Length: 224
Image (cartoon, rainbow, N blue to C red; front, side, top):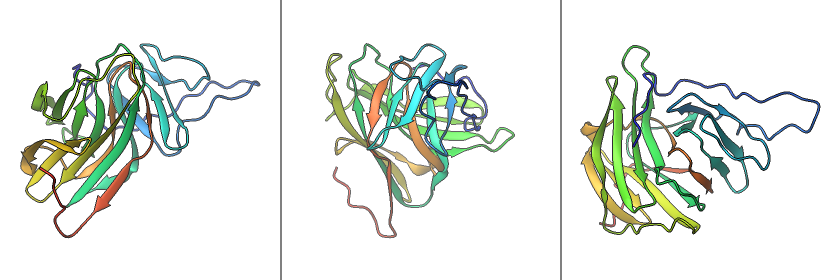
């Protein structure tokens, strides 16, 4: 996995859309921002493909369509979570040769002077999953890439629906893929409270139908 090459993990990136007298390309989803691993810009041009320095991110009911050039974090800064919560998304991966990751991030913050932080929970087409964190100016694997029980490799020439879920409890954080718990970690070992959104790797082409959050005072039921 290519490590992020930034220090401020969640800094607003203003959408750039070329102006012309022709029909304008679809705008980026209202309120959403992004932080890319390498320099790039949004280019929602119909029938175009992403390049090494461009990506597409647009509203497409239900949800959004994303075609990444560089990998990155996509988020609405108004979406924040703390305490006991669960974040879930249905992600439909289209045929592609890339084996880069897709999933969710939580705990996003920008402290301004070395206080930047984020954790991401991701899966790859080869059936491996991983959990990574960025804090104190460094990226580290909380749980490095490895095959996980309940995750099957995804065919490169097929369209695959995957439901990813992150469950934050007072003492732990659990990661679920298609209802199967693929791991649990001490809450104190990674950033949890803050902005949440999508982590999508380079070259990934997918549709995301939803991004749901559930907050509860009582413990969540956990299928182990």
